[in-house]
Image (tube, rainbow, N blue to C red; front, side, top):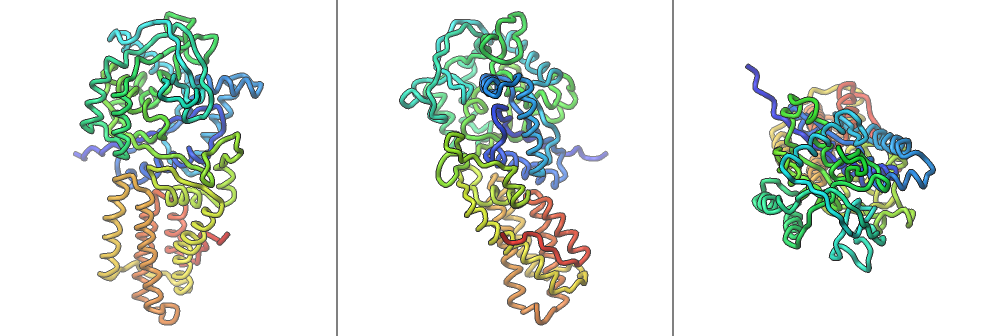
Length: 473
């Protein structure tokens, strides 16, 4: 009997289709891709999900502003996100859309029936302050001068009769789950923030909106109401793996091992989603990894400021792996980071062109087209084992920049080795073999981060042909 493979299910958030993708989501999907590739390299049964969140007010208004039918507009923007995954060399196994009429709609309706069975939804008239940017109702504590803290825009007053989910019923249990670490929150500092949200008081949440003011799936038995975005969006994590149509697949992958999300949607994923799962009698995700925002020259990215970074343009200019490297190395995984062209080019020239690119070119150039067996001395093997240990530790803690740092320490070791041995003069076969071994191991460690570069290095080592991986810019 063969041992059953350990499974690893990882998701990104699903971005709204009100605007094309920007570099902030590129960061998230690349981070998730590194984890998915790393666990695939560990021979685990990996399922990696991304997709788009299409229903709601944001997409509806964006489509109206563009003079297009809402589904046509959503199709276009969703297509751009799907293309981004291809351009960034993302290894996702599925791309879910919340307008999917089969598996996703069925899952949303199935969950709704579970809530009803548990008497967890009810209808009431409601008056609240709504931020269309967040697709969320706000309390006065979440506003400054009547504006949403995140989007810096005035909120709207909404008065409707909607269906509500009994969040209050599950808050004590969610609080206990978060407090005891049954859902691991990364970084740890966010755990206190989540508990603070609960302790400050949260009300039951609207799970529907009026049909004439919103876009979504109709509520069964009440055609005047459509499902509110979070009741529709969060179930994507289970709809894509067969919650409504493939029980075997669902049991194989659920619960999620990691939800990768931005810090602006923590409340929905760490409080609302666990409550929804508890109501439905489903297992909870194992961990939620929360990354920061990308600023541009110290300022938040904003359409009004005209500083939104297009990831497609970055890739066209510098290449896929260069973009992946900058976002993973320059930006601390759980904190806000900064982007400027100057920083990008400095990091590119120092670490890529002058680092791994230079090392591979030097060794293959000195080898003169000969192919050397990959054999390592004890001191090099010890350095590599130390690197692997620190690399594994960094990735286990979602510290992508630290994992890359230890790889680049190994690259520096190789550069020093060349200089100490004056290899360009001696061309010692045993030293070249040692370096080929170290470079081969380096390329394996790089595979989750820079998959194309890793493949090119392995190919170059097999042929002995000098490779200019990253021309200077």
